[in-house]
Length: 122
Image (cartoon, rainbow, N blue to C red; front, side, top):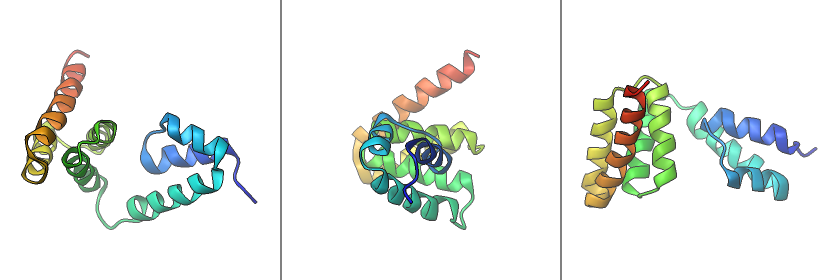
């Protein structure tokens, strides 16, 4: 039996830590695809032997290197939630620079700076 869209979106939020508009679209238009995609995320991230902070820092580096703006933003949020320091997140972005060049570094650090500015204004 197919899962209902709301259940799929709750699952997406649980395994990813976020839900985007495209998740909502898939939940309504192709719930089977979203269910399988959620399963991959669940298998790779939730069942990993790595701790949450390490996984989040890897996500920061990879998404920065690939210059995926929203992915980098979500990964930085996950790293902060997992207890990563600003220095650790900065280092992950710096490592991404080796593989992705200056545009990767600029993207990651610009996003991180906005997050830091927002945190320090609280």
